[in-house]
Image (tube, rainbow, N blue to C red):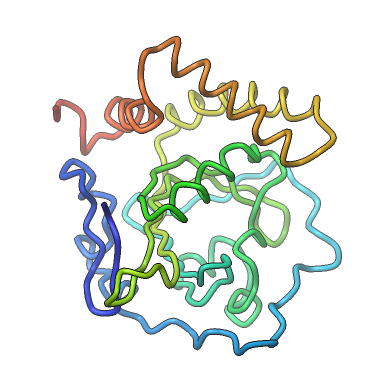
Length: 233
């Protein structure tokens, strides 16, 4: 299990994933940075903008040696955002801190993947996922996200930590064909929860046909498209 505590850095259980871990790329400051104080009881969470950006067919990219880092509380409210995150998403820090992390959620991102991510990390497990996000101006950007729970000394989950790298273009193209099928299924449902569950069933059928788990599917894709891992078994 990959988790973080107040004083320990998150280490993935997969040794072949070390290229995703920020402290190996001189960004330990992001991992050690103190998040904003938790909201006090009754204190309102910063609401999403009244008018969400109009999605644009314009991509924002970031360096292959850069890592987007953010931290949230258990409700997904942002408590820390690093400089790369702020620059790529276009929101100033004061707009991000205290806002729901889904302020950057792109409408093209399948609800089923979002549900899988939250179900996994809320159960205390790490997850790797390809995610399409939306910047403040409506542009989009893809990330390969590694999300882990943060726990206190008693093992209680107190928040979540996410580090995101720029994914390989071939990986994006391949995963987006799966997301296309998920979106197609979700459009058949009016209820958001039903749509997410239905699109996860689509993924389950694809994985069953391939005879692999979600983790195996994602890691096969990462291995085949990441120069750092090609040839690593």
